[in-house]
Length: 417
Image (cartoon, rainbow, N blue to C red; front, side, top):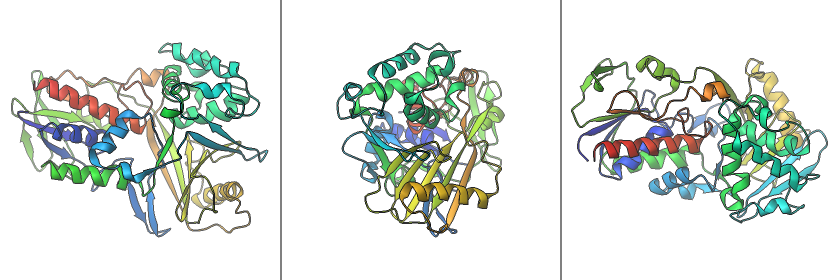
């Protein structure tokens, strides 16, 4: 492949594009503004709890084809773990009820026919009504298409959609919700087996990707903040990094894989989402009790998902706008009270903890903001876009980020053909 591909941004979208391109023989340079790659999907050593933690708890599913292809390409598969079947334990903190959603191992959703596999006190017809989301128009919200109440909604649909959309589902895009339902609940158990990065996100996604890129001769440049893109007619002609300006040759290509707020500065002619929602993660240095599931969905609580790692219990709370301004100590005590009750650790004092608040974790997954997501092609013939906020037909997820990187790499390949 002739020329150099400059990838701006070393998150999963940029790394996945880089890996796909070097595997096809391209010369690649990745420019990352921060001192480490990975973006929102990375691990770091936290001094307050004295151990490695992830900056966010992320879950893959066995049907996330692009994410799994990326892991396979870089050799990160060995760091993912999960049950042999698509089983999701749930707990109701208010009633103390426990149950498990069991999607089995079929390619079709036969599980909805089995009362023991479904949410308790639900019927087949309840699930069939979710099909209304599959026919949603671009301007419709979830509440326009389905009834946002009832046993199934409260105990499965809302937890699933708020985790995927990072917004109260009633307000969320029905089209994006339909894409999630299509690729999860309706895809059968073979597509829904949960996979967790056992040794941390960096060990699974970032460290092996960087090693793969080095082995293939790619150039990874950290702490490289792009200041300006210079344009001539219908192409990007130079990249200005402040202390250096790189002139782009005729066969050079650029993939911008930076957040949308950076794109607004670098590429003001490109329409991007402008509203965002926060995610809160809490980490506690505590040993999970023997036999505790690696992940529990929680209803009627502040906690939404509880993850059990060796020596650590971690929590994810989506659309956490009401919590982001609470005092950290108050928040940690509140969350730990729920975690202790769920894990059978009642009475255990608050252990060392850390709260990680991402105020702009994802774009706001409403129909209005979804309509602002640009595709990968720009007005400039040698510049392409990638990122979970671009028009991937998915919400802002790991799968969406990597899928966007792969798509941008395909376009670069075609442009050089």
